[in-house]
Length: 459
Image (cartoon, rainbow, N blue to C red; front, side, top):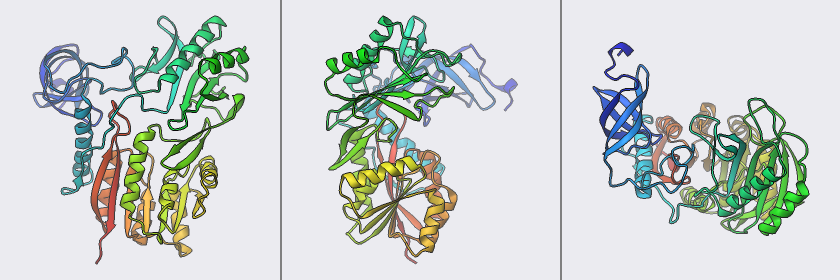
């Protein structure tokens, strides 16, 4: 189909039926079999749209009017919904979101993985899907009406100013307000990423859900913050739970939020929190799952699928700061955690010491390189847990797993598409996909995590 033969035109209005949803949560309509994606529309609705983009293979429609709403449509709880780039599913009931995420996983496994009869359970949701994030990073800059501290608009770096966020902890909104007042009263410059001028770049808040401890990180385009003692006094007076205030130095012209250097302004340079019975030290640069409630659900399912008896050798690949490794250590004989980021491995080793765990060893390196080296030394895993980044597992690693043939593979994934691709490969090379459990780590967004159990096919 060429552009000239497409039956829709940019800036024209159409009434369409929403016949499906894509993996990003957009409604899918068809006009003369030409696909249109519509933000904010739900399957089953009839809507009026304005075509705002036409390419060779698809169009994009802006939702103008809902003619026949879905029973699953709800009023968004956020005042900046639609302008802010986060929480794009607020127009959808939470129950419908869980169904959507389950459907995304099932469709990916069938279409991308080529697997037709896999048991995919319904996504595990939260009892209370609000205020669930333990970390927030507010960009600061100049907006349409002055200083803006909020989140970026969809597909742009325009900051949408706001005063509260329903998925963050209330304390983060309080801290944002205090810093905003301080910036205005002391005439502190905020960052202009185009000109690379201005001081305050981001405000990061980390909260320990079980300890109640709070860390504030002020990211600056410089090496100091004028009147920092006054700001610290304001913060700790208003929020006594604050145990750490850090100045993070980031003078690079980059989209990376945190710089490599930190200065302690108050308290200690870390806070602590628990996942299950394990305690973790969290610094400004530490990786720590942002939804601690669902993290316990996710890790407990991974431990269940590992089905350890106390004697197994377990590989935890892409182990990060060792959180899953510690859970596995409860019932394993020996756990080897492999991670490419040296700082994460240092944190993992410290976490093991903090929890008196002695049957875990952490190794710095790419999993696709370390696993063959361990295998050549005669160290073979009975169970392998993988938790790769969004791009999925490296093919060389998957090939090594096929050679090693562990009894079980537990695959933790944040991307159903690459999960399905890797499951397809492993299922063709000696492993059966037993079951998949989606877990909703990020309510009100299209993102979904999964835990998959694979077992070796006995010949």
